[in-house]
Image 1 (cartoon, rainbow, N blue to C red):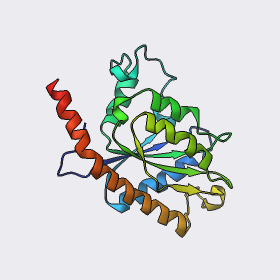
Image 2 (cartoon, rainbow, N blue to C red):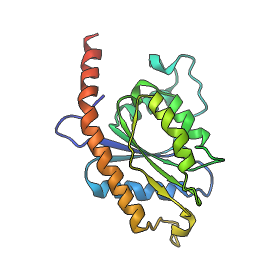
Image 3 (cartoon, helix red, strand yellow):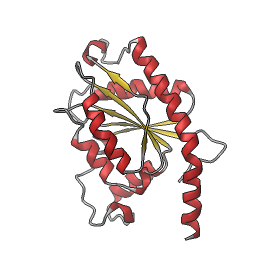
Amino acid sequence: MTAPADSLPTLLVVVASTRPGRVGIHVGEWIREHAEAHGSFDVRFVDLAELALPFMDEPRHPKLRQYEHQHTKDWSAVVDGADAFLFVTPEYNHGYNAVLKNALDFLHQEWADKPAGLVSYGGVAAGTRAVQQLKPVLAALRMVPAVEAVTIPFVANLLGEEGSLQPTDTVSASATAMLDELARLTRLLLPARRGADLALARS
């Protein structure tokens, strides 16, 4: 599914962490606001903690899109309706978390030919090792990760009294650069997806 030519493309912000007391929800809320202010996208938001997908329980391969469970059909519709993604990921033991991998693996075709931005956070490494593990998974799903990314080191030092993220100028500038690139990639990939939709309709 692709956005109508006269509307803004849809950007889905996905918060990966589900841990109680997580920082990720604050990072996700900040990047959502930044993306809304950027003005290139109709921004939507998914918190995987609220989505609460079970671990993969579909009997057929996701490529077939023959889903049995309503939670999968609902997740499919959300992802299918997006034109681009922003994944907000923590780093656990030099990798990204299992909940995000599970959410990706539930689907297949719905991710294809769409760009992805990556926002990572942590300590000195700023979640960059999780990002490096995530990129080949996105590529296997035929997504296009943007080179520009947001990496937030020592994220705990950037939290305000109420938990909201107070980004540095460098972090904010990197977010703008990433969103610029996501908008460019979205424009480039939309024609390919429209062609795929037309071929599917004719089949």
